[in-house]
Length: 486
Image 1 (cartoon, helix red, strand yellow):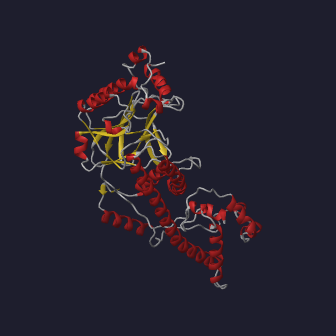
Image 2 (cartoon, rainbow, N blue to C red):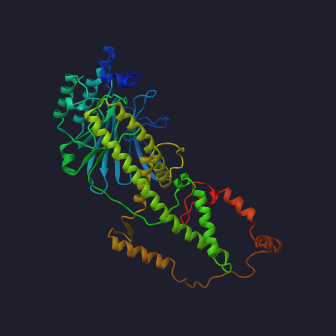
Image 3 (cartoon, rainbow, N blue to C red):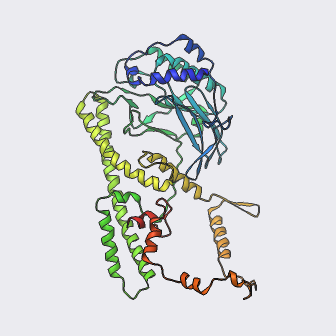
């Protein structure tokens, strides 16, 4: 067993007692293990054992979006860090890892700016805190790039980071000294005072999750900020680092939403509207025209109905989130009020129902078919959907050795290209003679009669039942699941 694996196994055992370790002094460990932790190595072999990579792990794909991953494995249900990066906007050049961190060197393809992102998970057993900080110190001293360090440090910087009086001043001084020696700046969080709770009615609240940046990284992104997101289910609050740059791509195309099937009486609404639109059509119309007319009317109805439903979702979600924020502010002043925590738990259950609908919404757009239903990965699906939009957006085109980047020029070039491609057919004066096909290769009269027969309702129903549920919708915006359900 390698040195870092021995340390990880011991730390993983301590992680299971994390709630107790915040209240109590940690138990002692063998000095031999502490000494072995001084010489830690990084293992980048793929889990399948195919090869050893000297940078980030081999590319894996989420949907159609290429990802690179770096991780250290968990031991049982404890420990472990997973770090991933999209390669649509940045290039991930190298990776590193230790017992308590994983990192990636990132290059912005647009500006060529390079920096190193580190994700950390500090030990809950504070006997390992000095090893943790020494490892980070060695890593910071070994890199010449701007750095961003974020994660669960399991350490506090001052008395205000904890709602109890149980402090370890030695660890506080050690943590602040590490920050000072490496010229790091903490990006102050908005949205909450504490990031961890033991989730009791009279809870312990601690600020454990942070983001630090180097001076040169802050100079590059002066508008960067960190937001403490709402905690639901987990004992930690997610924290979001934003560089201050946002790009949004909007689309006005209609999409049938799978989440609508979760609404009460939705099936009856569709059936009633279908009958209503069908009765409006004239019997003299061709069947295909009648079908297109009904689909168009239904699409128009669902667009407005869905917009109203989304508005109701947002209002419900905002109401719950605002109530949770009010309760959190009350907890900062009176953390022992059991009634407040009971109200918060009830609101979390109500919010989970809204998040389930959001998960279905973004899962449909993320196109991640290999994920099982029920996985709470709304943020992941959201990321996949945004990645697909960015991938479909045309930033530049190469034409006859010239790179076209201007939006107006791109639009004109695309229009001219397809106008020429789908324009008037050119006369090539080429054709086939009547004797080209041999008699045994031609369709017989009997086969021709069979092929020209009308489709039966049973044949159409059989084909619809065999369609894949998760296929992309057609031009009308309705996926196969709609036709299978109705």
